[in-house]
Length: 317
Image 1 (spheres, rainbow, N blue to C red):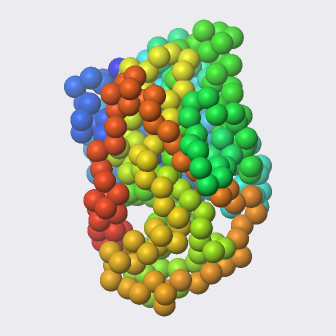
Image 2: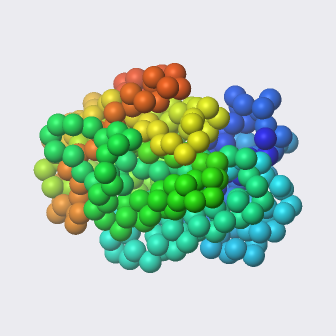
């Protein structure tokens, strides 16, 4: 395989490339990491494998179709895993423009060239946020209707539809995965868990939206990477797989877990802030399909994953 990974300097992308180089090196000829190095991508995330003989980095924006064509021509990719995306909801609310340009136009440029160069397999990594929000019961699965509630999730939903259209219109070999909230090493500082750990480490108040009752389904990033590989290599073409770990936590509950792990009193550490616009109440993934069809299941318990995550960020901060 000559694999192109987009967004490989980001959180999930860098963990996925590390997974490829550490655990799947025998099956791949080359891994090219395409990243524009916007706010969410950093070369710090790739230091551990930047000298690997099968690794290549290319700084490139997916919107730049001419340079993207040259990259395809040079490397003759056989497989693509597409993770690159603008992904912060608050930023999308402030200005959706970058999200439309990157997540929709960028994805289409990639699809068009992948088809032109006859790529054998194209896997698109998406989010559970395209499904909207849940009430107190129920879970998202592959049959859930799309109902995005903010510009970020709307742009990801649009990119999902483009990928699906290429399968149905051109018989192009695609798969899609929609995953729940990830946590673990290398996540951007602005995200919830790094923000909490950093605030505690620096003796600052932990900002918490509203009453902290919003619920998320958390998965350790390396479990997600293994799920991506399963779908990418064994999933049925044209199909979607939901990846989650059945680990729902209210935001305030999550903060209490982190405070306990870091030996601080949550009651003295939390600062409640005004809830954001379009803040979905609850997400949860039903991972039955990927477990039954592909034999994947998460390996990392929430307790173990949090310990590993806190250790990594404590060393960083």
